[in-house]
Length: 520
Image (cartoon, rainbow, N blue to C red; front, top):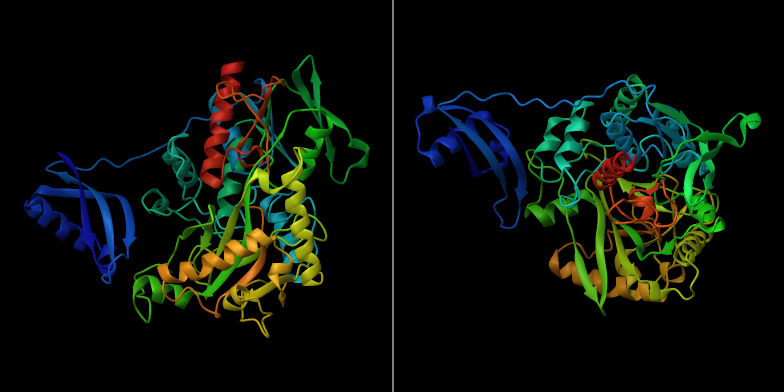
């Protein structure tokens, strides 16, 4: 017999099998010999009271031996199968490719950037010298933005598809099995590249193709349908304008591929402006967050670095924390020259001395004048250029202490922080729109009331956090997932405005691959 039961353990007990067994025996009121094994289903830290505990959902095997769970996917050889072009090798593109193989279709993935190993050199140039390669950076390249900006797998996308399937694929390719049970699963930037390499090898071994340095230059269309793509190939000027034929294209280019939106707009393919969120990345010493959340002076070695999530309505406008990175680092995520964009990530151990989180304000369509479908993108780009100018170049970011920002004064100095290109004291109110500044100035003290210790001048605001989601939506039919006016074009995931994060993007990639199969 199997029974699923919730148990509560102290942090030092949660990782000890004997403590788990003892708790199960007590709750189930059975003898030791009857408990043949157990499996942890879910695990989360509960710090709502001063006594911090782990809450665990556990499956107990009573008078029957546990059967080890295995999960495998069948990837047939599709080298000679019908081709599907997938634009972008982020989570949406890679999972769309895997699903195409399962469906007996041949994925041809074209990626403007480099593979994960080659990308490292370009990221080093960004961090050390402030030099941005517009084709290979934190946003562009194998694995997409998430590969080198954290690998957080937390999602609320259960209604969109099978979250566990996505997590199981990651485990099959080298991710720790803990991601299957942790409430906020996380791989870490130091481990994710190896997992992405494993997924690439699975695609290639099954006869799929992944072509790096292939930048989408045009869509081939005729009679209202897709006929293929045109690509420019890095390092080979003689192959500029190379054509690839296919009657299905999954467009999974991510939220920062602005040239793709320009291409669609130029060709008269319908796109729409989309609301997004804009603000700053706020960094505290991790010990401050630990003390606040765990009600202690020093965090127990059995607890992970503390996390927080904050939201506040100010004048009818939402202000919220976003992509919180315990033990993390603020990263420069510009994709072009003369712009400053920040994001955050954490290594797998989350052992950096700082904690950071995007803290952003909702931007509605009415906040930006005009009818141009690109108006939100152009608004976003203007703020990023203003941040670059305020920093003075080389990706130096404008920054301000928290209380100084709220009280409207320039910080005389800045605390140590994790942003490698460097920070410069600036008046963020001169960069951000007035309504964003005022919303943040009202919300931050209120966050401090909810989370004592949060509102402090030890915290630094680094600008700007602007790539929270796509500022453009590429419309698609709800049933077929195709563009309503271009058969065979499947707008996918974050770049199309239908996902937000690694797991939801992967799920959308799977859904688009299923839609391709249904239409063939």
